[in-house]
Structure formats: C-alpha cells, structure tokens
Image (cartoon, rainbow, N blue to C red):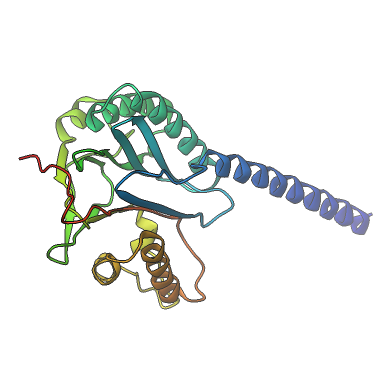
Length: 275
C-alpha cells in the first residue's frame, strides 16, 4: 500500500506541476501581449527597446504613450517583486498609467494620481519604481520624473559626455500621498542634435557574474559613452552584449528593460532651443 500511495502522490505532484507550468505560460503570454507591439516612428528621432524577464513572468514594464501629435511619453517601471505577484501589480500599474497619462501632460501629476491608486490596491511592502518622461517632439524638450527609479542617462553628442538625470522622487505605493507629493519633482532637459537618452531598470546595472560581481552603473555609463553615437538598434545590441558577456553562464536574477531614444536632427536643422 505504501508503494502504491507514493506512486499516486507522485502522479498528483506531476499533474500539479504541469498545471502550474501551463498557467505560468498563459500569464507570460498575457504579459507579453501587454508590452508595446511596435516601436514608435518619430520624425527626427530613433527609438528602440529591449525587455528580458528573468522568470516566466516579470515585474518590469515599459511603454510608449502617444499623447497627442506633439508629445510622446517614454516609461520604464519596476515592481518590487517577481513572478506572478509582481506581474499582477505590473498589469495594474500599466492600466493606471495609460488611463491617467492620456489626461495630463505633467509627469508629476500623473505620478501623484497613480501613487494614490496603487497605495490603495497593493499589499504593504510592495512598491513600484518608475521613470517617466514626455518628449515635446517639436521643441526637443524632455520633461522627466523619477519615482524612486534608476537615473536617466543623457549623452551629449557635442561634448561626448554622459550626464545623469535624476529628479527627486519616492517609489509608488509606499506613501498614501502627502510625503510623495512633497518629494516628487519634475526636471526638464533640452535635447540637442545627436543627443541620446536611456532609461532602464536596475536588472541592467545589477546583473551578476558567476563570481558575484555586479555589472555596475559606472561600467554602464562608460559603455554608453563608447557607443551612444551609433544607430539606436546597434547601440542597444552593444549594451546588451556587454551585459551578457559580464554575466556569462550565471543565472539571471532580475528582469532587464532598456528604452533609448536618439535625436537625429543635424546641426544644420536643429529644433528651436527654449531658454
């Protein structure tokens, strides 16, 4: 009887495992379908993106928000949590962002509203970091907001220099509202011809090698400086290749998301510079 019982339990375990795997596969398909279907074609700009979850379903999210004929939003977010719980919070975050962003061209006001909604919905201890910027296509002005997220990398073509854009902000879902509203700030950046910006999640800079060495922010910034003048698709390929070479055979421990945009205006036909 004992042997028969063990065989039956093993059969049930296999069935349960297959059911879980099937449900995770469905969740991964749903999540993939919620990611942008295409890269936006913006006159005067090159845009591309990369996303790789470390599990079947991830807690990273990126998006392009075509707000009107003159403004487009770029967004990267990261849920503090992996697997199905992180994916569920990501789905809710996406829905709130898309609903609120279409009403408002202020990243700060959008973030304030999303924070209120997430605080009511997600368990204490979970939170979402986010970098959200809106590009004024005609003027080349980025209005940036960070909700406790990694800083944006800005490469200046004219000086071949890397700058960090890191407006003050608190992660979404931690505070009911007053502290968040006092903390979060917007920052404007005037892009110039040839400039590039990169927003990403911490899985990029925290990617770990087999000997537990992180890829690190400084290595990433150097790689950006070396490759930022390339076409966006080549730039992104070189960034990803550098991370993969660093990680080697080590198992990934976090999702990686990268969104980048380069101005392809020439020095002869720049957009207006606003003081």
